Length: 180
Image: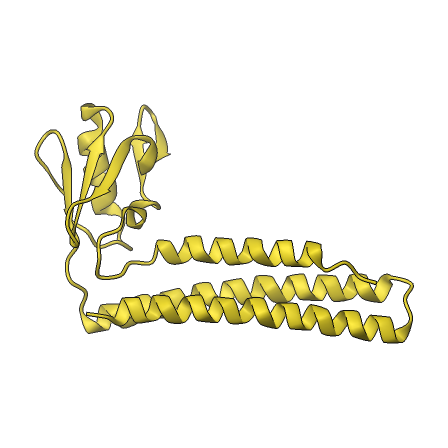
């Protein structure tokens, strides 16, 4: 019989990547992961923001970015400002950078939800590829037709289960995005 543990492990990895992608999707509230995609030019190379500064939440609509090296404060501010997908305007006082999170308009909320739905499709495509690979493995194994059919049904059920998890996670995120 076909071992589905490897398929389940791969599907779980897809779910984990999807959850990480959803954390980066902006809602109306401040969250440190919002700045996870920001790359800062420091020490002659581009580095993720979390390697040059500490990002904390100060209230529901304010992020505080504290650089490890105050000499990088201008570069960090510029990197946040230049990331057009965020649309943020940081202000620094020489020691810490304050990043106010502006309230989202209805139009912007819909745009963000649409972007997030693209991540759903990416996750589902990855799952379908895993399903197809697993089905191909089953076809290549020396099993009776009944065993192959049973294995394919189990693979389809696993795929459907994980796909519904993605839908559930997206529905929660969409509700969070659209909440004013």
